[in-house]
Length: 622
Image (cartoon, rainbow, N blue to C red; front, side, top):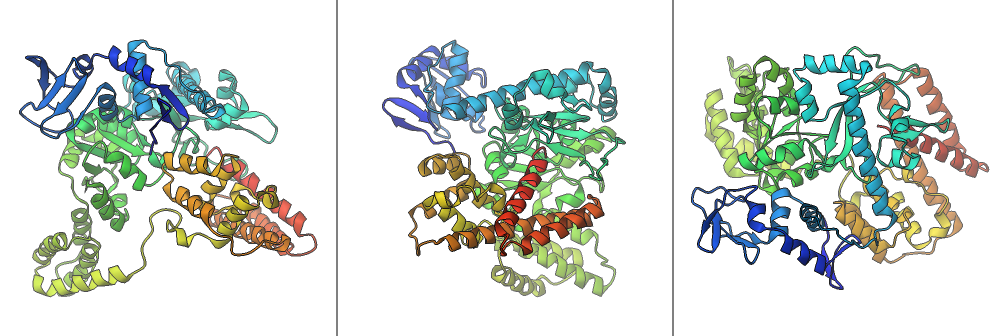
């Protein structure tokens, strides 16, 4: 969410201001007819220009433009506005960015308020660094002798030089600091952009090495992150036993939020708007394959599961969302959430029936027409899930049909609409040769059971604010009202809940509470903004003694350490960590936990704090 308001005859966005006089100058310098004809054909009719509306489908022109006043209006869908409004709606930009775009187009220099200060400069530096990095990686892929293996891999996937240039693909050489040195990036910019970090030897180190690079752009086409794929057959196990993941993405930065970013949306959005359909893939090469197969409306999530924020973005571009996943993965989406997203965002989710074990990239190489047909004939999400159940059933016996019916009814019961449920009941009854009258009360009983069951949460952390860990809430109250008591004792890794960590990071920035709330709201972190709003106006139910503060910090630290130990145990089960290293670490950390409440508690607290910070530092390149 971007907050725009008027103040002192200036237009503001998060501390950035453009004077009203300059906004008027931009409008006056922009020919609205020339601007709109870049997106839709207009014909002169008297003093007006008319054409088909670019914002809704129609066969008879109802879109009218007044060149003298610089205004447009559609008599069909009733949209209206000026040059700035048109750019905002057609390119999905906010007000400030739309004014900047038109000013650049007209050759007008804007004198923007610098009240955003260092933060804006830091962001600009990171954007510039990412742009330079993408160019450097790209040139290395095209011309580097060491990139031959990467070029061979891409050709094997059907990606030639022309396609590599279209998507600005790149190659990260197998060097510790090739990028950092080539671009002469400062440690601050290197880490701020997510391109690298300063290692334990106090040397700059690249985040990605020996990987094919897939640049990630925002919707306006500006580079904000990179994803890297290790080459098939390359050594994936380091000397310390760590297994390199197949894909690595930039970490979250001030210019990149992966849960709100969709790979290739900058290239796909025009065709998405034109067709009213968006294809969602799992991988970067799947997206490229869809483009090559004549469907340039594909996107992919960036190393994270499809979620609520992605739907908020997609609904602005299309109403039909087709999941082009491997068949096994497509059916594993959280059904209750998909149906809720369909309802709340007014979209239809369908699933492409891909051959079992096949992904879009493989299918596009073998049979691109089959991929196009799978997308065109995608079926509703519920139908896809039911077909998976019924196709796997043994319907030759009465017992097999009964078991299949029970499984099918459980799937149907997840849908919130009784009308939709009844339509699919008819399909199940027909397929299994059962009486629908028998099935209806059984599915309704399951619906009542689902309604009384605990809410299934899709995100990695619970989203209800009353479910937030109490130690974290107590620590945030201390940070708000008694900052001196905890100023040197609280760090971000102590907060195991993402919402509480966001609140702490905001308070630790030194900004005023109101500004932190505005920043969280502007970046879409509404839960965190609400939590801080509530805390800031809450009443303190008691005074905090020194012992109280230590107890809160201790509880917080224990919870954070417990979460970290679970991660190590999970890595141990997955065999991605040396067992000897894991067991030694677990034993050492537990010993320090035992000492936390003893006479050497402060020393144990400091050692555990350092351990958590070192884990955070090691995970940063991820």
